[in-house]
Length: 411
Image (cartoon, rainbow, N blue to C red; front, side, top):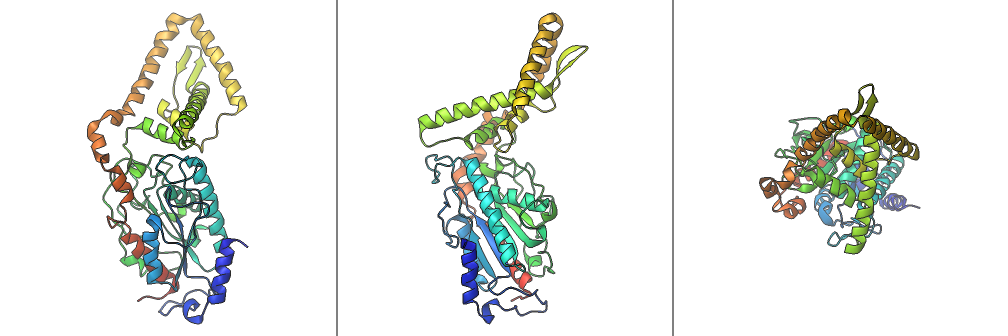
């Protein structure tokens, strides 16, 4: 039996009518399975705050400061499960995680979150789910929420009452507190509820510049309005500078690297960079050069930065053997055309490539701007200070309100 199954069985054995019966209130909640709460919260901790052997219920780390008050306030309405996963960053010194590369850690965590959500949904058909994530965990929850919102997740969007992301590396540029809902400060009600409790909750944060180091996206589909993205200005995890493409490229490479010691790290990064440059160049040759009556033209469908960043993203499939072969043959054609008419082709291509390099420099203008980096003088404190800064309080209030709305009981 899985750990979720054991949890459910234990709850069934311990359940009493006081703890598991319907709440008191004007709204009549749906019939529930004994042992199943109104709301089950899934928490995914940040780097170094979980492990494959981590407790599913111990309130530790950033999310412990969020969920412990919720469970204490409404123990009869809420259960929580922390997702056990590597929470690693390639074994890098100071990260507190194991040797698993960051990208693999995220993939393992996402699979565990999806499996846990599916099990709870099957065992407790009337229980709503919420998901919260911090840092690496927020990236996992963000990917989970985008899939659910698009109808591709392990549960339907109607089963998700709310999602809270803190310091999400996937935060897209210009993302509002409620992605897709600029200016919204109150979460949408949980599906099937009137939202009386949630209507009193406000999650208002100051506008934040930049975007996450991964910038995976913020389209939550059917979950729009029920996903909150909380980011502190100066936290590079979710608010890295706008024009620092090489920083994001480096983050993408580091996410796949073995960083356990300096020599291993250098070898791993060198191999990854070689692969990134090769993959990006294959795509550029196949898609960004044209051959026609006028000769060869560099007419990019995407910028060099976009090509490099995509190639460094672990989720981007590398070019297949057919694409590599096609690029090699195409480059042969390009060089043959240029060799046959160097006077006509080289100055034209030089001008076209010059524009691309100029764009590359513009896309990295913030990297060498001291004024920009002043915003990150206390980056570690910003990244780890969500609890101390009071930014978890609204999440606590939201989850408690959701539980009351779902149970049909209000204090």
